[in-house]
Amino acid sequence: MMKRPMAPMLVLLLVCSAAVAAPQKATFAGGCFWCIEAPFDKLPGVTSAVSGFSGGTENNPSYRQVASGGTSHLEVVQVTYDSTKVSYQTLLNTFWRQFDPTDDRGSFVDRGHQYTSAIFAHSPEQRALAEASKKALAESGRFDKPIVTPVRDFESFTTAEGYHQDFYKTNTAHYKRYRSGSGRDQFIDKYWSVAADAALKYHKPSDEELRQRLTEIQYEVTQEDGTERPFNNEYWDNKASGIYVDIVTGEPLFSSLDKFKSGTGWPSFTRPADESNTVLKTDTNCIPAVLDA
Image 1 (tube, rainbow, N blue to C red):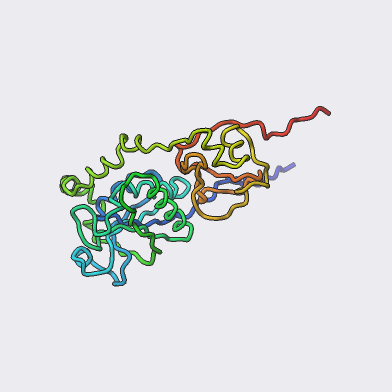
Image 2: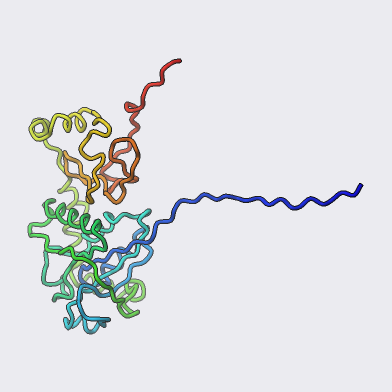
């Protein structure tokens, strides 16, 4: 009996992969774009930081035109980032630490409108987060002058000439001399050093003050390890954009950008806005007991 060869078996491999988030963009102005590009370029999750111009009405401006004050544009840096690896809140936190947000006439030695600061929001959610971040900085007491950095809607971006890109890498000596001589590093050290941060640590009020300020359920949850009822609490179905803060100290805890529907009846987030402000604990109090049959 003749044996017929078996047809080769085709095996289909199903590969499950997480959905890839589309790259996000953020645009910031904080004076000389060399000095704003560098810190973002080094941030994990940022795929590119490009120096350029934004905020004006003129088409395709050149560096010479903008730097001379001949346009309505600002020097900016446009950041492209992976939102699964770095949050917009982290970008905001990084941005605020790079310049003087109380100066509305320029930035350090560079004077003029073209060197003033701004946050250009690419979406209503970015605007809400930027406004909340600005408000938090203003109320922090870090600066004794008003925060004047405006939050504006993003409209257009023009990339600066090639020799301005990655300037801190391609012209390291020049970059360091300029940065130090401008007064920027000294300003950052004064207002954002470890010592400056330590002086502004979030303060927990006394128990007496908390009892007067908080509602009964707020006090129970924050001070007595209590739990709000699922599907019947203030924020479980909240859809507003912004930052969730500790009601006791004001510390930023979570961003609405990281909120997801967990089906638990409580607001749920994929990650904290600032890991230094949160502690991970296992809570088994909400798990129903298993009854014997």
